[in-house]
Length: 454
Image (tube, rainbow, N blue to C red):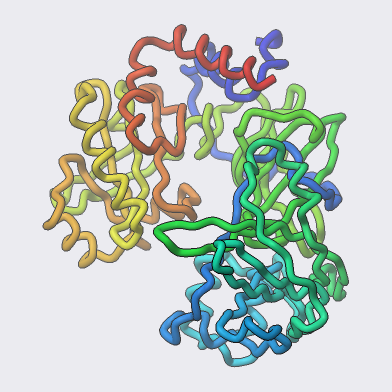
């Protein structure tokens, strides 16, 4: 077993559960928490790239964010029909200060507190308006050239800013080279009870979709720290510089890694020890890792670990289903909602995979974040042939698994361990079928895949 510790986590776990699958899970109590200081570093590090997206048309008055719009002056001649758009640096601060200003009502803010996990005790926010966002305005010329103006000094005035041409770039080719296209924008962040002035790099590019122009943006920087001679990198989502939805990677940032980021409340192996990625906090600028007990099977939502146990009542049949009922078979969990158009778009692929796979060896189970009425209406239009469980306060499976993006799929093996996540598209059946050929061949394929990324 010790000879496997130099392997990447997913390969180590593959071997670990082959050797110790008979161990019984134990309940995790409070264990030592290690706090590590975070340093902000320019560039994307070893992460893949994602973008926030802004349309260029005027915001509808029905948009729930329309009340947060502020006037920006100084558009040049010829830009009268261009509509300024906000770019948020810190979405939590933006929501909070607009709530205090009365631009967001208490009901809307309560929804944001729950869905965005706003916790003023864990991460205090400024109780006044700060420069946690800026503006960009765009226009397209007759030759399809796209120009934009970014309020770089964040004074709500475009007259003292330059006009730029939005590039169409092969941004997957060399991610860190994109930093040369970034603009530095003045911003403010509330850190440890003080207002921190900083210059935030913003990269902007253009794209056309369904004959509509969109502006895509992100912040080309990440966070780093080091623990027990192990580099740790962290990067948030495309639309915020704060440490809200943050993923973690192990390894030297100069080395490109396989795209297997670790999410909050998942586990990482450092040397001979396993740690829980507990938190990454903008306010304290710290990463928190919680040391886990040795030689203990740990439940997780992470590839290579036993899936968290749950039970629930099926939506139509009213049968009680437990996760343990699927032991001995592969199980594909599909977290979705009828309100989620990408979820609905995936249903033909899910149905095709379900039809083609051997259902004596593979089962499907839908976990639905929705209202009872909406789900019933959807199933009347498209009666899915696998059971559905409505995630509610009484059976909060979505919350248990920490799902904050839909759709999400999780493939669980016959022993109850998670082996794949986010299976989508026409290749769902092929991916699952690969596991049915046997663990030896599958582990070999994983090893080969890993070597290609090294």
